[in-house]
Length: 124
Image 1 (cartoon, rainbow, N blue to C red):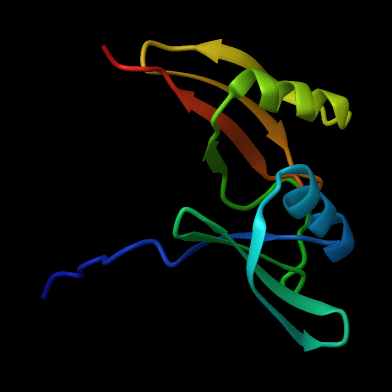
Image 2 (image 1 turned 90 degrees about the horizontal axis):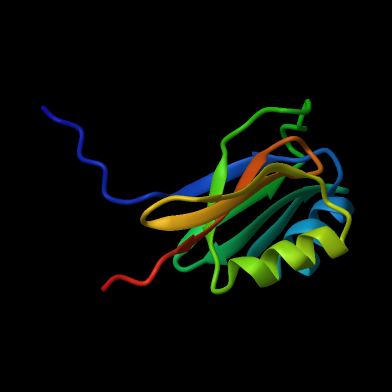
């Protein structure tokens, strides 16, 4: 019997500080909360919807720094995104790079997760 993967259920990022995660993912990145559950006082599971795929953050399994899945986010305007990231004083871990199909740059979230901002180039 073969396993049949239907879709991505969610991408999970463990976080150590929920308030900081809310500021980073919600305020800085502008992601909208789709689901939030408080399992116990101060222990949260929050899902942000990104074009039908959930990015889940939780302090149920606290981040230990520098781990977890990487995340690539398609953006409308890479230059504006870069300017906003720099204005927020978030360090750039990979400077903007040009490739034939796209441009991208990367940062690290407050809990050590790699986040790449990506913009596809127009096709001719």
